[in-house]
Length: 342
Image (cartoon, rainbow, N blue to C red; front, side):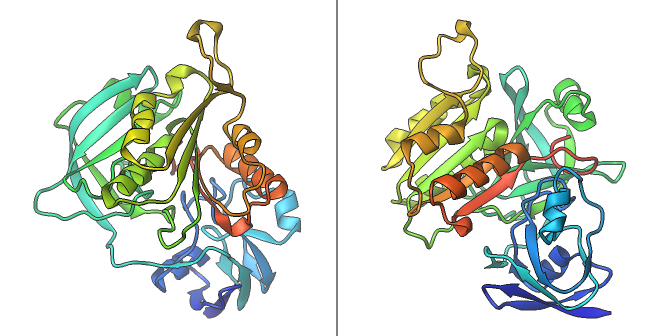
């Protein structure tokens, strides 16, 4: 059985069958809703149900809390329609002409800028053109049928390889394999590009980039794309980490100040040991942003990091700094059985 799903305030509508998720139906209809993990773990697709009935599906209790459900919220990557629906989804785009592909790739280089971070460069097939938008990610396709998702860190203008930033997850099967067994010339398979996280290039508003840990990867793709295309909008990066080692490409990020007019890098450490000799900003990255810019009503914020970081930044920036809800864009790096970075 098929139902009609209508989105507010855009008024856009699309059909959705009872056996598909709302996100799947939207993508099939050429509409790009906010999403990342597609597994109910990150919360990026969380939206309010204004009218209608649905099955919430399989979701993470920490991502869709009792309070969320009481407020009528649902995760569109998990929920199935049971009637016509009216949903509040403020960030809606049109899916472009970039195809999602399943491709092999060859490990070209592994480097370790920090003890728990590997920068992985993948050589793409010469016979296949792979396109993506800065901010998107790929899924590695594993032999057991599971997937592991990682954001693309290079700009789309570099078309012959992909760069990924992989943090070691204690006990994580795939990341342990990358750190202990993966070697140059190994073959992997992936699907992509995926995800809705991207810079709204038609907007003139100043851009705030907020990264936690390896959430720096999609931010790097966006900034290097901005450099390649000559973007003139003001950009400020707040990159947060526990310690200095976590800012594993800080020299590169600071170097963007010379390459991109209007760009500024603000590193922030939350738990820097005395031995680091750190004299810069301390605390939470989004708290540093709030101290610098208490009025964000004329800005856009693009945040990448853990779900907890994303939730805190969204609540504080929209609640205390006048940031419009539809000017906060996010990509949450979640840990789940079949999705992000495990």
